[in-house]
Length: 282
Image (cartoon, rainbow, N blue to C red; front, top):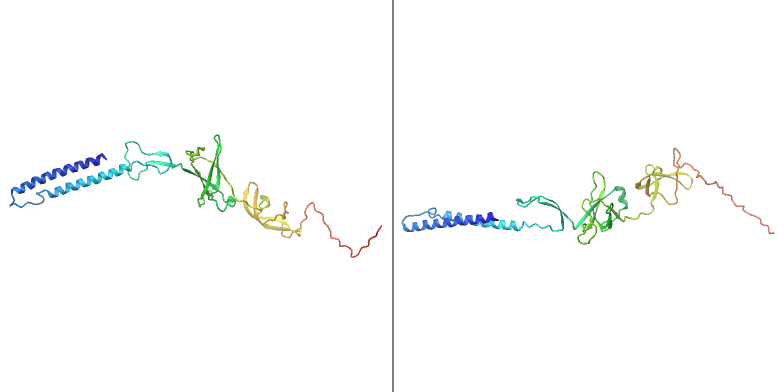
């Protein structure tokens, strides 16, 4: 700003000097009116150049004033200063990074969802309330809401990600516990309810097939739909009925239609009733 003001003063001094010299040349020309004088002798170009220098300096002063007004940088939101790259007395050029800020009006928690868990997600996830829990010495619970699905699959983990938004994470307005950036938390939210789900040991499911005993007491393979693997069990969502008889111990080479006998049952024979019968009264 001071440099721009000094340039205006210098340009104005040059203009005054050129105007004075032009006045001297004009007075000399009046003493000899019969002699032709050029504009250069009358110093008209020099005066115009000095006037242009003054206008240029004035424009530079306006730019400096505008830049000075813009030096007071205010974040458009409540922010946490992560880093500061400028100090007192340093020159800052346009486009240079002077600080790194984090918006603390809201915070976002990214939670990965495995592919086999996606079946438990509701069809509409936006707006579902979530509970954010931080465990440890200073454990606490905060309320959040699922904001969106990132819509991509991570190349390394092959998982999708949901974003949970927390309002006022540092508790400036609501006086709640602080959720600091970089914290590891646990997020709980209600999933969808699945009906007619069966949990089977993994050894009973081979190539998504289980064996049952049909009404004719014969082995029958059934294709099933595995929606989740958890420990030693598979969760089955389709292919079985509630009254199906599942084979727990298979023969070495099971074949479709193979006759079986269920342990603990007795063979019964159907006895036809006589066509006529006599009764005797006592």
